[in-house]
Every structure is written in structure tokens, then in C-alpha cells.
Length: 215
Image 1 (cartoon, rainbow, N blue to C red):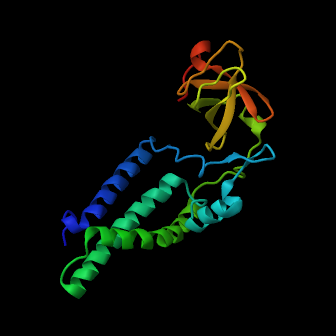
Image 2 (cartoon, helix red, strand yellow; image 1 turned 180 degrees about the horizontal axis):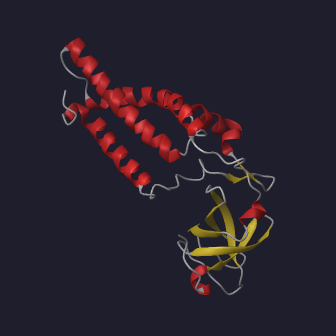
Image 3 (cartoon, helix red, strand yellow; image 1 turned 180 degrees about the vertical axis):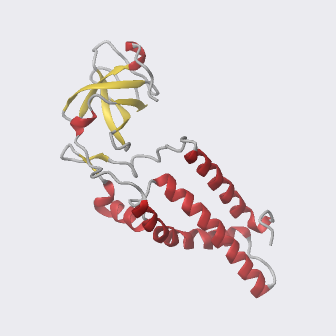
């Protein structure tokens, strides 16, 4: 069976995407965010908590193995298994019926089967990855760190959502107002968090202070 045959097209694409993601990871560009649902976030007590430890969403991410490895690694493993299982399904179908399945049907079967297999595979991988002593940090520890306004425009009395990374490298989403009353910080601008009041941070635009951009 040919990888590039029409009936194997979803799996060829998956292998291509997996190779690209692996390359980005190797050269250090694979540090992407996949939303606050899989990153650490702020809980009602004002502390940063790991979502894999709470609620239905936490149970699902734990079941999928997302709490064991970074999402980027999980996705690479999933794409590889999706392609391998899918091509195996097509080979089995050809042996049994004389013809492969429709590409969409094989992709549907492989997509479902790959989820529990991925969860099982990433667990030993996660055990081999270096871990910090803890991934839960207090809000106050984010003061002094740099972030990026992701949603809205930060003005006095009107905070905007910003993404900030803690010392573990995890992304957190917090609300930020300008430190200077007259400042306006649009989406996409980087800020230095200089103080905190409750769950709201106050930041200085890096461009305004002519600070070096985030590396």
C-alpha cells in the first residue's frame, strides 16, 4: 500500500504535520500556546492552580494524558499514532475485503482509536521528562515578569487579558491595566508587570520604556 494513495491521504498529512512540529520543537520554536484550557490559570482563591486537578475538564485532561507531557509533545505522539493506526486499518481492510476503506472512515476509526493509545504511550514518556518540584505558583510571583496583551486594549479602569509565563515556563492569563494612568496598551504589545492589586496587574509597556523585547 502506498502512503500517498488517496485512501491514505489523511495519514500522509498527519505524518507531514508531525514532522513539521517535531522540527519546530527541535529548533526551539515549538513553544506554542493552545489556549488557557490546557495552561495553568487563576482560581477563585486568587492562586494559580493546575486545571488537571479540578473538575470534569481536569478529569478529561488527566484521562487523555495531557497532564503527563506538554501539549506539543502529546500532539506529536497523537499524529504519529493516528497515521500508523490508520494505515494499519487500511492494510487490514485490504487483506480482508480486497479494498481499503474510504479515507474519511479510516480516519474516523483511527482518530478514535489513537486517543486512548496516545494516553497510554505518553505516560512513560512523561515519567522520563524533567519535572519542577511544583507547577503551582502564587499570583504575586508574576510581578516583575513580562507578558503580552492578547485580548482587548488595556486602559485605566479597563483591564485587558494578557499572557504571562511563570518561572516554570507555564503560560498564565491575567488581567492587566497600565501602570501610568495616561497609558493605553493595545493587543499584541508587551508589558512588564510592576505591581498587583487583587487579581488585577499593572504593567508598563516595553515600547514606552524602551525595554528589550522578550526573547
